[in-house]
Image (cartoon, rainbow, N blue to C red; front, side, top):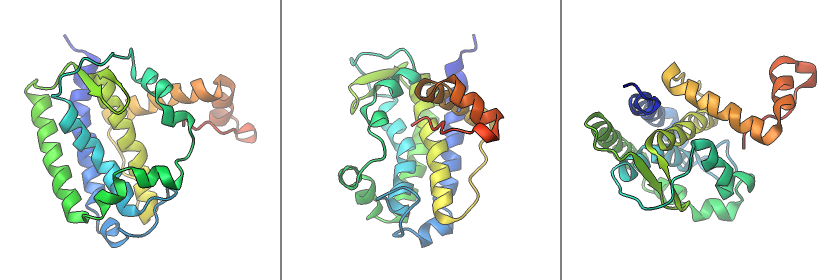
Amino acid sequence: MFRAVDALDAAFPTAAAVALDLIRRPEVTERWSHPSALPHLSVGGLACHLGRQAVRAAELLPMPTDLPTLDSADDHYAQAPWVSEGTPDENSVAESNDEADAARGPADLHARCAQALEVVGDLLSRGAAGEVVPIPWQGWSLRRGDFLLTRQLEIVVHSDDLAVSVGVPTPEFPADVFDPVRDLLVRLAVRRRGQSALISALSRSERSQDISAF
């Protein structure tokens, strides 16, 4: 029987491949050490953060877990502390691995992402990925479809950030990648801003409000 998770099993490698194509663009390499569109993060650091979504998936999809399982991807964002903390400050960015990974250079990132994409595709195609996937840094697990959706959201959002940072068009994702992310962002925006803010922003330019999900 078809399940939503099956669609995400097929869509996630596509999302990761689009991200890898963007990461490999010469404009990213040329501006590697320049500031990105995100505060306190270089273009290289942002590229590494984007590429890490496939790397994380390769690491975590086959990993067993006894961590509690949340009901949905929506609950993941409702409970993750970083969502309510606002824009990361310089110290928070410095404590992440993004800039340390960037110091290893573009070629290293390209190789790691390509290998991770191959591993993820193999795990998902032969049914070797777990039904429940741990997120150790949060202290909980998600069902595989919800986990892949969170990584897919990261890819879609940060692909836009990276493209803007280096002055290239934001990649167009196919519907099976973009639509679930769009729907999740809308739900998160409504949860944070309310229905009225979303309706006004999408239908009444004269009453447009901030509807960012994060």
